[in-house]
Length: 236
Image 1: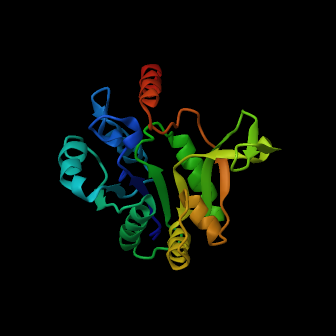
Image 2 (image 1 turned 60 degrees about the vertical axis):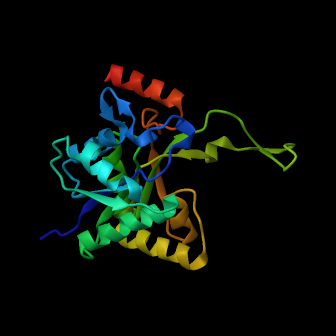
């Protein structure tokens, strides 16, 4: 009997300061449905997913249960997990809950995803899982079209970087659960703080592979992103 699981960890524990306003960006409405709810819906509709972890600020647990989860008929079990002071701590909390759920089943995967990326496609999710299952870790990336300059502390250009070897990382970032768990334990031991989950894997010398991401898989960070998000919805 196959006991391996596919566990999305949707991270939405940030304050959303760059969006402005009173409401945190993950709770803003997009066509009358909260952004975070839309993100959960993507994974809820995916046949390969098991239970879903949603990491939110501790003080928002009751709000999310009442306003983000309960009004919608999700088919999968949604676990609300209290986040921490940093994204890294929040992810570790989600991984810890996933470990208990998977009961050490070999080959289980976690899909660590930004709660404010509601337009990730099933095709991209499938490609990421296929590669991560065989290689241990995979992230979606986009090419860089602009010319890139490396400057010193005085903003003087030092050199032009080869943009053919530089990519913009997206989520979900998909890893074998046993590897990402070890990577985060090593990060704690060595006092390492990564900018994303892949950097934590890299720090632990675990391989991370890439697959092409999607220009529609946007992260809602500023008011301009909300305008683009509504355009994507209009074209759907």
